Length: 329
Image (cartoon, rainbow, N blue to C red; front, side, top):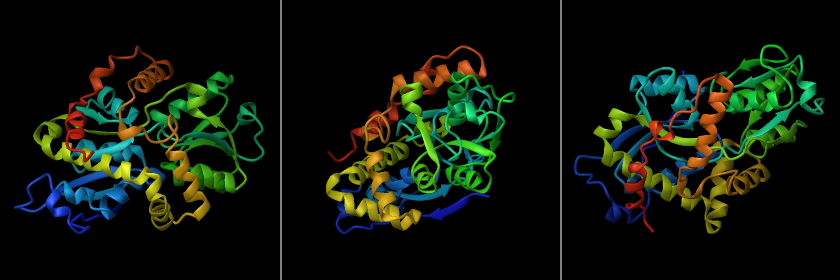
């Protein structure tokens, strides 16, 4: 069951109505958006609180997912319009599930680190234990497989995968059972793991190179039928992202993280700092990183078998390009 929070973005800031891009004569356009509950939810919260969605004529119903499998099922069924997740999930939908999905924007590099229990000194100590993941055959699980292969460990022979779902569930599984030796965690769960005495064996981008992690993807037919809505949504997201990372708005951004994610002040502040770090956190204006995506495809081909496909097979960034013309400069 998806945990749903409904955000009604209806003119939350004085004077925004004069800036509205989409005609609201018949009311705002309702969108069902699905993402993971992490610190990178910050732009969504800001888009509501500061009226960016409302300015673009949108009412966003935001769902926080338990796992990428449920997220992909929601998009495939049409229950969800737009997904923000590791874009390797879109690749899996297209190549494995044969769903006609398409990636329409970038977002971030994942803020991923390989965390282990305090008794694990190096990767060799993982032998005989479990690694907790979201799903076993996409995104960060593939990163884990590759990293462990680099250290001579093979899935099913030297360790097992324990698929438990999103970052909060991975951290909870590690906290509950020391046999869950490690997990790839992102913000704020990586910082919470450190506060519990767990240790990082390194950032995945340092070990594997640039990586296009989070991005937005949709069903291709839905994008064609709702192009203007999609473009306004992406414009609102970019505007909210800019506002969130603006140093002048630091106090408000930290306060949102403290309030919405129930984080200690210090973890919220550190999360914001790391999310603003180039190459580790958010991409500037959620721009798509083609080099990082090529690494995603190469990693999937190496670990799961096959030959990397043409990146353009999975992309249509024309919606993003048009959205950027709507963004308030």
